[in-house]
Image (cartoon, rainbow, N blue to C red; front, side, top):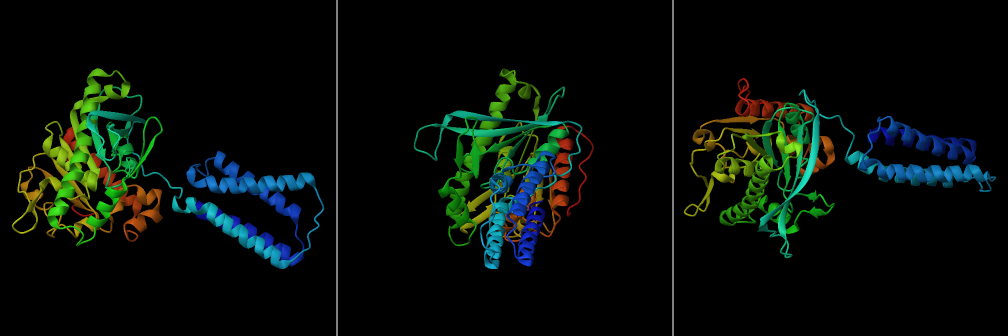
Length: 434
């Protein structure tokens, strides 16, 4: 939609400039009426939801409003045009207007309007956000002595009876809790209560109940960036960083789960009364997937785990004798579904932080592995829908796989897996490669 709006407005602008040059007149009144008409059309398209209003349209709306006001004032004053026609002035104004329109439409081009992936469940989905404060932990990223807080968002069946399994999601290295919204919505529509966690200072940004915004910690971002480039850390240093990151992530997940379990017994809020506390699954993307596998190993009340494109840090040891990583060889007893993109698939046979990913298939009592051929790391999130440009930049190129096919197929697999393990529904049938 952003590209279409830019194309139409530029045609109008250049058409007006060509007309002025051809007739050797400025046509101030015509220009004013066109400005008013464009703004009015933009408002009508927004009100009719042809243009879905969000932050990406703000700059354009401001520009069109200013131009419409100037045009209206000019028509009301109805002054005769005293400016002398000059072709250079007409062309110059057209070039300036083109620049202004491009700048105003940059957000809409970076964050384009898109259609949500197909939601197939019977339930309407509602959401709710909460800020939980952990009285047993002091925030390590600040020196204020305040307790650590964790922001969460629920996706749950609306106006539904009964109780439903709880699914807990953890985002990637510096992602956000909305990173896989299409997945949460699909799961909730089929009768799950899904809670996604924002890990403060690990998430790109998070907003608390009181409106406070907390940004990602720059030192943590530098650690992640350096760890993704060979030679910046020794294996031992990298292992120590992994332990630090995982300790914070798993502590957050355990705190959120324990808080929800406590409130389901002691809080009469409807959302907590929807939860079947005997059926819990955890899942996550990238670092969040690693944390989910870790939590699934340690907690006996977790019945299923989905790892989306993550190294299995909980199954990894640092061997001082060889100065490198190796698989622990422990038996993993919680049912596990691994979903991989090409970016991770090619690393599974390397002696790296992915050294344990293949051995878990031999050391697990029940595990399944799926590979999305042509997918990149962020293809397994909603980012390629929300911002194809940002996704392409962050993952070093556009993924060959169709975006909707990848997300909708992944959502279907995750739903089938949780249905099988938490609801005892059917069999988990899947292909190794999609």
